Image (cartoon, rainbow, N blue to C red; front, top):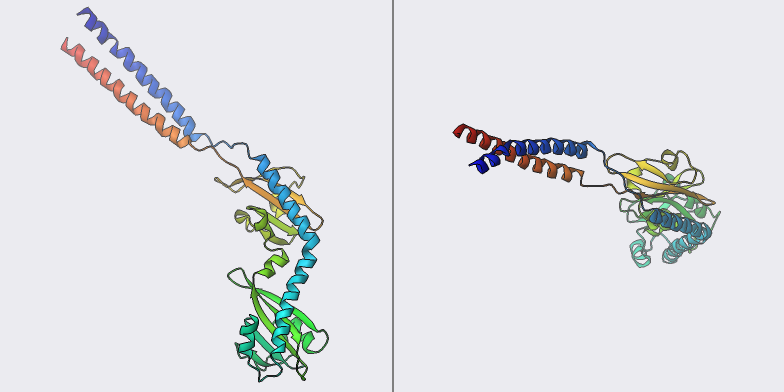
Length: 301
């Protein structure tokens, strides 16, 4: 009997201990619930490797850009000359010429730049100078230069339509202008450099104009907006939430580039919170049951 009473006498202290544990658990859970996510150390090696890779690609492009642009222009002129050889006059089959040379459109003009035949759209009577994309080719029609590239027009699928012009091969003066849809123009101009360097890269030329970018979260930001100190050291970019990056800015003779890598954050505070709360509920329930049982036993006595 005394042994039973001793056991019963322990109910209340045990219950108190369990309830106290609940209070401590709530305090700990609150700490996890309201403590901000801690940032881990960013991967400095990856950042530095990406920076060096970007710098190398920019320096290589500086050296070879003139050749790359020249090669691109030559490939455009070859198509224009090939088309011109098939179009001696306005009665030639422009559609056939376009299909055989792989161009999307052809314009045949007189010596004043007025269009006298066209494919596929009927642009007869209009002038090369009416469109900024073909205006530079007017110099070919007038006999000032033998060939010329027009302005490039960006399409929705990341390709460009570029017009190339060559002088006519028949007896009549004028020009043949061909429209060519290509993705090589972007590469020749350096517009794809950031994608080649990796994610989260912004490249600007020496006058601060954006040349290329793969940094989607910084779509409307300049390098100066993001790197206010510009001291060559790593710095943090925080767009809020989990959009946190560690970045560096580098410069070559002609370009400036910002390279960023995501900063990892500790996840699991929420999980810890709910685990502790769950344990608290169990301890609280057990404590209440012990108190109720102790009260019932005392009543029975």
